[in-house]
Each structure stands twice: as C-alpha cells, then as structure tokens.
Image (cartoon, rainbow, N blue to C red; front, side, top):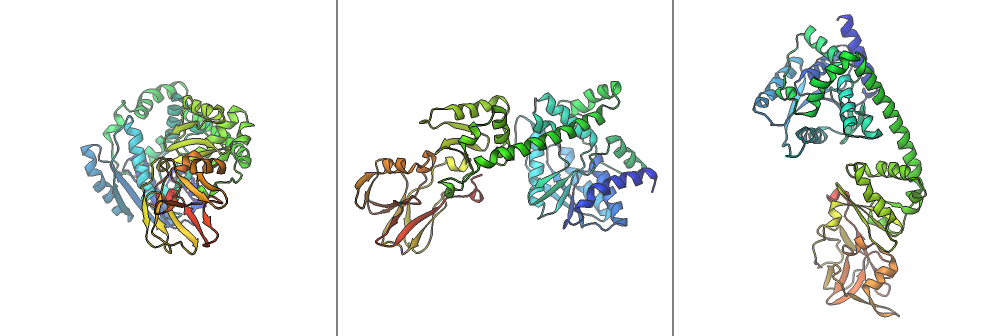
Length: 442
C-alpha cells in the first residue's frame, strides 16, 4: 500500500472507529467515482481490521434510459469485492426541482432499508461541502442551512455518516486512477441547467483559479457555522424548557408550548426556539413566511389564528400554541355504532374510545358535534353543549373530533371532560385515546 493510500485509509478509519459497534454498515453506492472509492476503501480496510458486516445499497431513480444499466454495473463491482448489494427502485415525484425530488426519494429509500442502529455510509467529500455552502448562501439560508452537511445524523432507525468530508475530490480521483477502478459517469452531472452542476463546472473553477484555497476555506466556514448552530440549539432548549410545561389538555397527545414564556423572548429568540421545535414536524419556513408567526402571536385574545406550514399548522388556544399535523385537519368519519361496550371502539380516523368501569346499556353510538347539542346534567338540567365546552376551555380545533356518546337521541357523555364524561350512579367513564402520529397524522 502506498503512502497516499495509507493516509487516506487512516482518515477513513479515524472517522469510522466510533461506529465499530454498529450491527452493520451499509454503503450508499451509486456507482459513481466517489462511492466507488468509498466501497473499495472499505473492502481494503476489511482485510486488515475487524469491521461490522458490509453491504451496499443502490437506488435506481429511473430518470434516464442509460441508468437502466447501472444496477448491473454496481452488482458486478460488489461481487468482485465480495460485498452484497441491494437495489431499490424509486419513483421521483415531479416538481420544480428535480434535484431535490431525486434526493428526497433516495433518502426515503435509505430510511426504509436501514435497520436499528445500523450505519449508512455516503461518499460526500470536501468539495461537495463547499458546493453546498455556496448553493445555500445564494438561496439566502440562515445559520442552520449554512452549516451545510453534517458529518453524521440520525436516519430512520439508524444513522448516516459521511466519512470522507475531510477528503478532496482530487484525492478520490487519484485513488481511483491508481487502483484502476471503473465507475459510472452520469451524463446529467455535466448538465449545467442543474444548479449544483453549474456551480461545479462554471463557478468553482473561477474561484479556485483566483483563490486556490477557496474550497478548504469554505469548508472551515461551514464548520464554524455548524458550531454556531449548535450554540443556537442550546439556547433554543433553554428557551423552550419553561414553555414546555405540562398543560390541561396534554391527553390530546399534540405537541404544544405555553405562549407566555415565548412572548418574554426577543423576536429573534422566538424564531430560534420555534425553528428548533418545529424542525421535528415540518420543513422550516423561509424568512418571509415567518410573518405567519407574527400574525398568530399578535392576534386578538378572542381570535383563533392559524399559521399554515408544510406538514400541518400552528393554532393558538388555551394559552398555548399547538402543532396540528395534516391528519388532524380532516374531519373524522361519523357516526360509529358501539354494539359491545365491553370492547374498545375503534373510531375511523380518530383513535379509540373505551369505558372505564361497567359499560352502560345500549344501543350506543358515538357521534361528533353538528351544532345545537344539549346535555342533561344532574342538578343543572339541560345545558347547551357549546356553552359546556366553552366552560371547559376546550380548544376549538378539538371540538369536531371529541367523541359524543349517545343512546338513542340522548347525549350521555362527552369523552375526557371532567363532569361530562362519566355517570357516577351507573359507575362508568368514557375515555378517548386520540389518534397518534403512528396512525398517519404526522
């Protein structure tokens, strides 16, 4: 092994050492130069070090006819190195950015194949990091975006690692040539209508001709910005701690925050805290779209403001802001007959209802609010349901989903609301388990 090979292998092994306990390593193998070098390096390392089981994953996008031959090329390369290959075909959704759509389809496929605590290795390198930084800078990204690609992150049930981030494209080309490796040259990589290709072929040659250290300097800047992002994340956790206190309606299972602690922060800290919180649920809005937060925050106390985002919306109620995934915005199917009260009732699109204690005599039915409902309460007579829900302070977005128990035309109970959800004389209580994200609501 040459000195160059030894240095490159040492860089790779240093990145991989913390992950030696992973049950398996999977290599994202496109068949291009970068992933071909990564595959070969790992096969060589395996000869001298004890590594977890290696396998490769090739995602076939089907975007160009020439790509139909690539799975077979990848299979031949893997067979020569004694590495198993899995080929996954995906459908790329049409949209404004083909690059983005293909990337989303690719990583969705990776998430599906990676097992618990397994490691997916991708071959992005130092030049890719510089391109990402400049691309996002031109799009007006903030600190989060300009920190560029992380060296590692969670992916599905496992983790993603980019072990070549300290290696240049030139080093990978040199390794491939010295070892006479064969790789795929994707024709689309030469098409400058794609933004990254334009940066790679038109912009970076000019930059590096004038500033030879430009790529190294840009990757250092990305590292500095990544450190700044980590500090902002720490600040967000501090600011979110008080706002995350439990509330009266936590049984809804919906993410929420107290408004008052957020209002005590500066606008910049509000945006930072909310960005950190929202990143678990939805793509983050751009700078202009943050006007939606200001409108929600500053709306009159008796209003029901809404801030619509990519995967759901924020609403304000009961002194809190609530994240409502898209599924919560769809009305449940109604009504549902409850033929056996001893058995929990699955509510289509709306979780599950059950009795605690002895179920009342039937025939029973679960319905949802239509307006004008009246309930008979011991010692209080007939009361309008709308007034009762107002007294309970129930958020408006829940009212159309709240199960109402009927026997014939009589409203017997309203699930989960103290004083309305039980019959003490008959010894039962109506409990509702709202739908969770596992039921397709996130």
